[in-house]
Length: 469
Ligand SMILES: Cc1ncc(COP(=O)(O)O)c(C=O)c1O
Image 1 (cartoon, protein in one colour):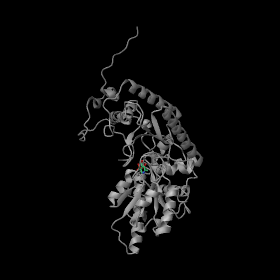
Image 2: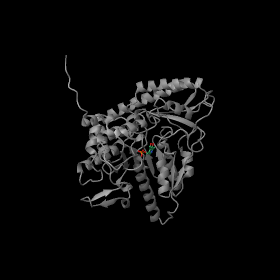
Image 3: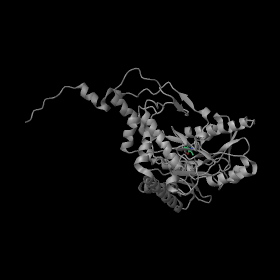
Image 4: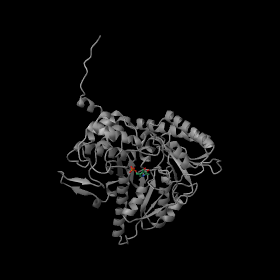
């Protein structure tokens, strides 16, 4: 018979098992810093477990930002974690990489001369839009002052914009003239734009990839309408293109659409690297057509980090990782790679649009056509659809399978129209889309047998539609 020696309880060994450790015996303090230290492994596990409640980012079909990153991007993010993007003197090679990306984008966006274009990286499109807007505002002010004209009533004319432009207008005390939508017209058209412009207009902002529907605004037509206005009245109005999503899509997938520096009126373009630029979160860019389009009085020269450094940014410190990862993606994928990745997303979006339309109760508002917008699908319930649920109920039920497919109302004068939208990003391919369709069909079946008697509304469904409103 084999004999075994029994061991005495070994406290140290027991503590190595996280879920037997004393740290996992307590509900951790939530709103005050605990007095004592704890075991890092145990706390890491507890924090990670808590984050499970966030759900799965890949099933978040509301967000425009990247939710997939390869192992190399993770490695780059680690390298860039302790490099401060602002310390250009201390990390000159990182600064050089930022500079190269700006040149690549100026070229991608058809700058007449990418060597005299100027730009910067930012934390995202919001900061990039603010900088583009500020430069526009200063150009207008300088021109008016030179002509000895009043500068007290600036206004900004836009289509249906993301909330960043509301913020811009409010923070800098500029009247926002946002062209209202109408049922059936969910973008700014030239005629309505012209009605809102006067001599106090600092510029026009149009969006390449509207947040509400995914559609591109008719930028070339808007620009021609402004040319005609100038011929008639002498008013010379600049355009800033908010290409948060479209800036990294149209050049690859719809190169014939003229929306960029090919139009002389376009003085600046902003875009999110962390959206269809395929960089991880924390990456945006703004580029001006020419160095003269960025007024010098907006640029600060700082020297306390060593050397003379010119900065035009809203924040100071930020990690270099996302910018270096952007560079990696541009080099690794090249033009062909970006086109392939994005065209696959369009294919998935178009598949979903067709399948959703086949269900018979939904009207497709945007079907993911690469010549008209971004890889997204937007739909509404048909007016005569005989169903007991609304889109808020539908979104809520889909959430029980982990899918985040936001429902929201459109902005003013079309706010009676409630839509639902899916954004297709890399990592959400046809196979995943077919699984989503199964869940959509299962949800519709459920509502056939469980009629909704008390509807949810916009406030009940904490749906983040990324319009920010
Ligand atoms: C058109 C548009 N502009 C600006 C933004 C803000 O972008 P970011 O989240 O990169 O700050 C978004 C975000 O979705 C957007 O869609």
